[in-house]
Length: 390
Ligand SMILES: [Zn+2]
Image (cartoon, rainbow, N blue to C red; front, side):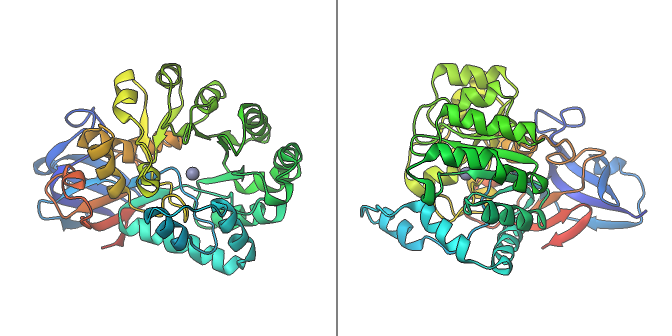
């Protein structure tokens, strides 16, 4: 057993209201004791116990490592031209996700694995110590199970999203595709995944199809999550709450009944401002959800089409600037909120027993994540008690 004292922390976000101030459990002039892979103690630096080694962060802020609960990292190719056309006001008609499906199928295992590793490392340098990733660009039994097998070699949080869109080969027969996704493809994918997800949206899967898909996944031991109410009003959010999905993701177009369902149910509302930013779409109204009492998470939605950012600090800044969140709320949602969305209690907080996952900011306070947008403030990252970046 080795113990390290991380001291000289100007401002520490613990996300544990029992040991610090407010919902963030804030402690000023703080210290942490890291014992092997977990936090053994957190409190005022003056009361810290003795340890084997000491590391002083010079008055900087420390926050829990970001928990990014929604990303699509198993993909081939990129969509620079589509983004450029969209941002240049030119109509773009070729089929978005389908472009990535073709490139993903054409990629080798090694290429896909290198892509996942690359973006996980990119996110880690920006303070993300837990990151979920989905399949969804294979859309055949072989390509979906391949994507999940590759993803599971890099992260524990793996989601089967065979129901991203109907596979191009079955575009004329969506019922046959739902049968595949809930049958042979599910059997091949379930061993590699923890979660099942569906894109419930006009042009993707309707409420009945989404229900069939999530129910089939649940019967195979996968826990539901859902892409819901992103582009239009629809049944996704309420279906997610009804099926006790861990998270309903996007939540941009919500009725009062949707907001009530999220506030009363156990499903986290995960907001993905990178998607609205990258498509110049309407922002989700975080304020409305928070005021109603819903639990809100923030995530990147990192994918090559609609949100090619791996930066949680960027999402925090957008959420504060454009979605009505306070800096405290946004930082909570990017850490503890993400942990809730992944039903994890070992990450997203810095109190005794938690995994020692943290980011050191070159700033005196977590508020600077929103106050200084676009600035690479994360200068040190620890995961499971080891310094992994900075
Ligand atoms: Zn997504």
